[in-house]
Length: 456
Ligand SMILES: Cc1ncc(COP(=O)(O)O)c(C=O)c1O
Image 1: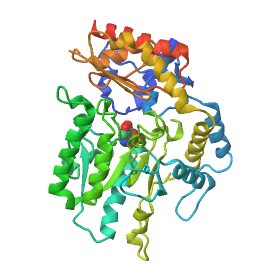
Image 2: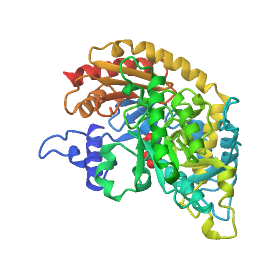
Image 3: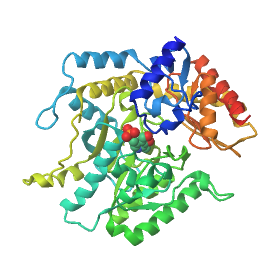
Image 4: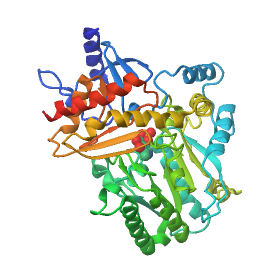
């Protein structure tokens, strides 16, 4: 089996260029590579099984996509059944049952503004499909911009985004992202974006509460909109957790204030729930915790339980209405070949079935409490300086992390049978929701042992 895995590695490296990877790390002249590839044979629940037979607990849910475990039989069966009926059809001029049913069901579960909301908004009413998170973000950005054009407000050409935010890798999504590692080299290609300070509770002054910190950031957003409001079409943000920015969390107060400010300055609000949607923060959608209703919600990743690429943008009748015209050019002429792919939609329907039939959020609360208790020694480790947790997301910052900590930790975690990829000095868990007692103990114990090894 080992020889087989080695053979796979060389076949892979002969032909593949891997995502988000400095490929040089996979080679070392004449010696072993610093980052050996791990060929995976199959998945079983929260576990990945390598071709060499080794098991890895997938504690990052395969780039934050997986909710109910790998090769989940009910989702797999739904995909297989759909594949036997209709695998793909153009969604312009044609329609199919999984796309319609998924849109109906997503709109039915999309949060309404809570009774105390100031806007008295109509619910979200329309769904536009794309086929990955970044593409979904592009849809929301283009729709927001085009909405103002169709209304004759041509001055509104800019977006506001949050410092340290992340919305994907395509050029439009990258333009509203602020993680230098991904953005810097492409900066000359990117559309201008106005960045407002992050409400990240981590940036609080001594003695300042997360809510006060959020209020301070909201004041800065207000000042920005005061100067530029008339040029801005939309504010885009990741509700509650800036994930790629290092799992930085903020108080829901910021979202309420952002909604009010968007209303005051006539700006549309885009909630990028791609990483935090579908129960990740303890509620089905993160922005629910603020009781607001955005003008756009972007969903992907957990939408299909991590099985197939799909994204959706939910929006309002008010947005839709401005595109309704005799002129084709005033319509939203955006498409991807696989827009609303039936297989992906049927996977998403199976995921919604699981949310409906099982007490997922309730079970997650118990799982989170159990993992939190097991992680006490990690939290109390002398080199762990900032512990934070919301729903099924845990993050720990490592004090005085040595250079190369992230890579060293990742390799040490592999030795412990764990798939973990710290973001810089931030170690985090974002596991699938299906962790039994053994998996929880494996995660808590292995993460601590990997920390000791990486710091040694
Ligand atoms: C908040 C957020 N938005 C958008 C994206 C982009 O999604 P994708 O990688 O599917 O393009 C990501 C990916 O991590 C994300 O975390």
